[in-house]
Image (cartoon, rainbow, N blue to C red; front, top):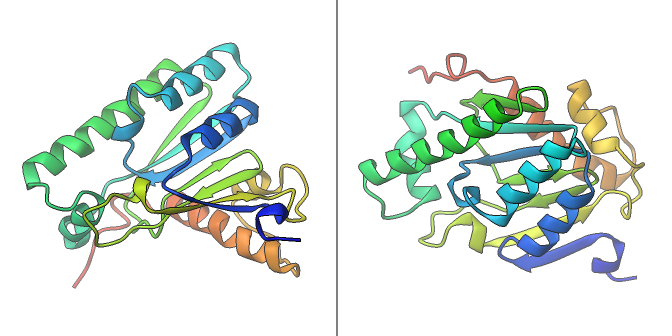
Amino acid sequence: MSVSQRGVRPSPGLDRGALLAALEEASEVVLHAAIYDNFAGSPVEAMLRRRLADGSLKRLTILSVLPPKCWRQEFSQVLRQGMTPGQISRVYAASRQWCNDLSEAFPNQVKLVLTSALPLQPQLLVGDTLFVGHYAHSPEPAALGLWLQLDACALGLAPGDLIQWFNLGQVPRQSDPWAIALGRYVQECIAAAKVSPRAGECRS
């Protein structure tokens, strides 16, 4: 059986069609992608708003990064290489506005978490599916890099495991290699959610 048949599907760039299909089915979603300006006014936003409005998306957690000064400049160039500080500031502002608008429109379903934890990879936890990309010192943004679509159930996990682990704030000890591998991504979301901007201040 090939890897893709077992629940691991690579794509050049984030597969928006697959993401929309997963969002159509998920009842809980966790976004951990540092900035979200590319989602503003997109079909992804429209899908989120529709499902939040009709109540089928019961919880949306957005982890939004507020980088401390010690790594803000370098990470900003990883996110959007070649942009001036002013342009980067506008990108962050647009992302914060998008997050704030969703959390204000749906306060009972949307949880906005500000974090200063260093993001290691963009990831979208959509029900039982993980979309995972990577950051790189490249003029091409993460959305155009290699992405993996990971189907947790096809890889042997029980339905709801990933979201349950995130909500519990810990990943139970695992023995299955795929559960361990996917659990590491959930642990990254859990860790980011625990690092407040003040707690993440850099010290010399």
